[in-house]
Image 1 (cartoon, rainbow, N blue to C red):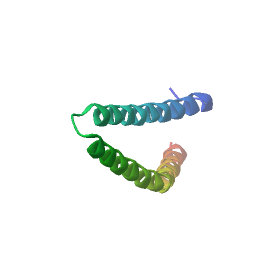
Image 2 (cartoon, rainbow, N blue to C red):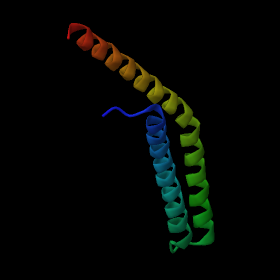
Image 3 (cartoon, rainbow, N blue to C red):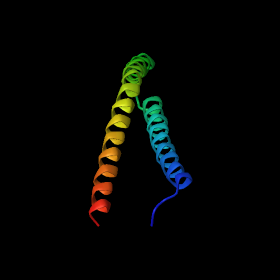
Length: 91
């Protein structure tokens, strides 16, 4: 059964939303753990600053990673279409 374009778009959107929910949950969980851990205020602030700096660094690399993944997916899709066209022309 082939998916229609709106179904494929909805599937992609759902996967992205799931990813965002996962990342959001991880951030909230990490923040809660940092705030409720038995440490001094100065230690907690230092750890939070480190986590925020790490998150900024990760976020700066995400756009390139997303572009790379998108390019790879497009190439795989194009290759699959070519292979499928080759199988149909032989049938």
